[in-house]
Picture 1 (cartoon, chains in turn purple, orange):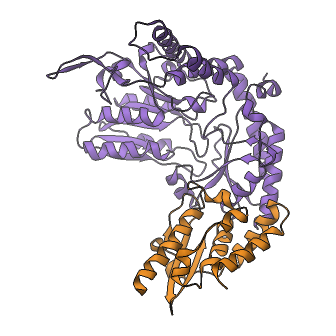
Picture 2: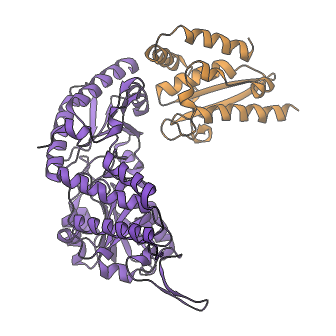
Picture 3: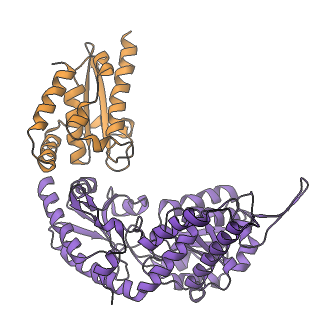
Length: 404
Length: 140
């Protein structure tokens, strides 16, 4: 059982006021808040052992390198990867996607096909369009239904021997739908396609096992899992990472350099050119420990309770419509009230100290599908409370009254 | 009235409000009363690119006086536009170019001025001034 009052004490930001009101933070799908232990880890790095990794013989460099690599191992164990060198540390999920897309540019041939889902974020669409322009491959889209779920029959119909890569998010950022990725991976593998899963929205809620999923690539974002910004995790199966060419050239990623020829370093360094976000990676390890200490079962049970409570409370508001009504979803509620513009609601609710996301959530194709300019999105984390949901509901009543 | 006189009047009006709620209620009322833009100007040629709410702005010069009409799909944004139109419309281009925008701070709408703010108040003012500069050049 999760004791929310105790948990809240771990997050200094939750006691601040916004617009004269206690902060109610419901924008967790954009970024999660940071517990004191993670903040301490960053301060500790800069206060005690700030130095560059993998190059110095001196004491501090060794210490920083050790802690950096321990963090990588923590991430490996958390995701149940076979080897720690299958964990590539990047600047974020977008960087990880571009790394894989760039790698596939040398593998794909004209007429090959890439399958993506209709539930994607812009950053999950554009790199593949660029890859198609470069390689002559064709982009195919798995359609969605009104509940905000992928249409699996249509997905199967898209698969053929031409399909080389399938890319789907584990959970939709705009609607919260949990996609049947295990099934998608299995079906894609049957025709020999590689599968990349964007787990940015899943990892804060679910403990992911890449081996059990059999994903070829899996992405996660540290700042959505109580870690710092600027750290992305890319898991790749060894065989795939060995096959893909390096993405960026620079220091750290080389074995030998002469002006005639350069040979590249082995995994994972081949993909980690330049000085990484050292303190960020170490703090990510601390964030993962923190989440595991609370326990993912406790987290998801409590968040589901919040989701059910919030859904029922919100539906009491007349004309409120929820987008994304799949039975399989995480604690994200995307909604509109009548014809009121989401931006207007967000502006008023902000005055009550409540942080929501409004707009198209960088997922314009989904908004086009529902023929709306955007939605209001409330996304809950394990440190939110039912009292906060009550505050949201009464602020929405007030906003509705003011705006209609 | 000159631009600065209108601004003074608006500042006085806003000073009567006790809290943000009254201020926003007033802006919402203004938004609702904003005259509708002619349909031929409500297209992508007249749109001011913002992230969330759409804003259309049209300018017309008659007898050396510049008139603006505008619209938005969000009501608070429309309220802000209504204030801007009251200040800048029906004025000679030169007066618009030379005018200050300090009154936005004075009426407590500064929070809408940050460049990333979704309603694009900054872009609206910029666009109004751009029109004024363009017509001023034409007048010469």
